[in-house]
Length: 203
Image (cartoon, rainbow, N blue to C red; front, top):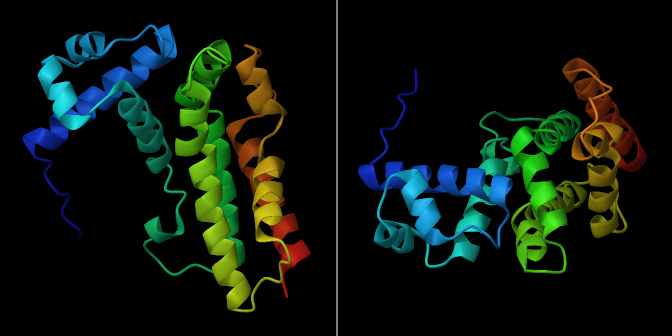
């Protein structure tokens, strides 16, 4: 059995800061939150916050990145060998779960409320959807080189799969409506998206 690595005090403080910042960004919006507020909420000094994150932009990016990491979307996070169709199904299921999570919905809303007023939307896109898409694109390129997938335009294909996974449930959550699909139904939908994608592009 693999032993769980004990985090250092510095890592614990970094995690506290990210958690506190993420919660504040969601409730108050990027522009209204100060590094001093984050420090107070995390129970650390402002100097400690700055020692881990040079500015608020880096902290916001880290909060987004940390949330994405929880869902193990990157291929290199998979610990056991996995076939292409199986990986695409797992990726789609995990992305679907991430998109409707409370934190993701909260961040989406924060970006919408601050649209055109700050760089928050750009920061969110680069650390979240943009990064996930880049990771998927690399994986699709590898599968194409192996002769498993035959894709003429990798960038378009990556966009297609991610767009398929975004469904009405996420939009309903964004505007405050109850979700129309259960967790199991969303999982099945995501799996079907992956299967359609694989059938369309397999060699």
